[in-house]
Image (tube, rainbow, N blue to C red; front, side, top):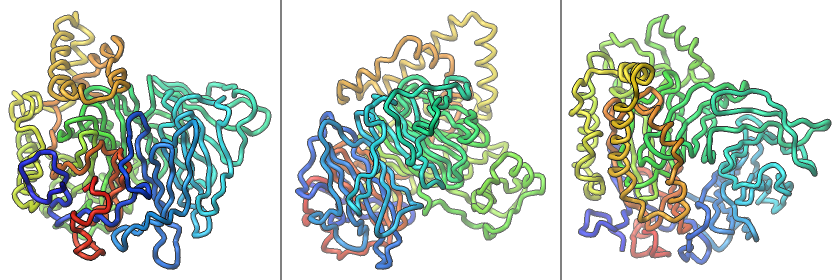
Length: 583
């Protein structure tokens, strides 16, 4: 049974939660699923994914939704907070044999009320281009699996292109396709174009134009997700080897890297202005990485298991108590530095870009806050605020003060919540390594720690240093991930049993700028952390008037933002839920 308040059972599913903006409410009649609304037996199937597109319909209801459940793919008109979902009338429904859809993506440039281009990746490696409005299947790429036989993990249209798209596989390779080209009847032959640290880019050798145009080989193990920067010029890749790699897409050059604290990275997203990247994965953490500085600036601990999706909320990111964000208020040197660093590329109109270089001597208080969210296999939704004291820690701001500010923000929300204590699902105390005030030198900076670690690596015998690192990792595994192993499926256990070389690599990076120790960067606590599903969560998308989540049972849920509830109040009663399983 669902519960709106803080009840006795910890297994309750929440139907609403409160932040400083107000109350977010689950709209039970806006739930999308298979027409029979029966929970899907998700064992052994691929994650449920959701894609949206707006077709600019003159009726004002131009949003369309696509989601996969098992072997099935559905395409509906998405009515969001306005009207109840009518599951009896999908625009298109497809059932596949021998393979399952794993991911999909609409091309927003070509979408009209009469036609949309939808790419669908499959578990056997193929990619299909379909038009669910015309009910056509125009092309099948990698049909004979000559290009790659492994599962498609992520597919995206290249921003600004009507014909180019990028496909990632669990083999660790990415392929650039042109929808106008064929894939050929023989396996492609490649020629090296560019090579760097743990990545290589090859072109396809062919007398006539054929797919793929390029093959990227990135890291060791699966490439779990990639994301284009808002301006489309950079590509962030999250890999099973635990590395985030950020590339200049056109030049195929490595811009920067980051290493997870433990295990593989499963998800990645960019801030709306392209200045920050958030990644999540098997270390149960969300990690915030600065694009300009190429370093970790914060970690967030709130999930009890693997983090499956991270996403920024472009609507709640805010600028408060300052001048109108239309003017740059830093010095001329700051402005030129910003342009020189490349942050001015298509981002200069962003309020974050204009404010992030604000002169630190400016006495007028300005608050810049980025809001992002995460969902995980622990069935919890967490919301996080990335505030100015974390983004721009002006000296002599110590870590202790930073940590206190974050904790206070979390406590304020907890006290004002009408749906129980949002922090009730968090561990009572964090591991000692995460408790920032225990730091022996709170004024220390990451660069100092990395310099010391590098010096030890170069000049010491490493025996004592390595044993300390191993102890540190064992503590982390016990605190964060090992307690969850009994709940994970056998295939994930196989992924967890990493090789000795991977452990050796992790030991080398811990304590460097690639992977700072827990006490070397601020630790964020979630503003809100709620259990919102029975099965692991696989989708989090922020829309203008709502946010959308989905779980592995095949239910896609709409949460109305404060003041955006368009349905009758009686329809928000959990007792009226059509399924009785999600809420």
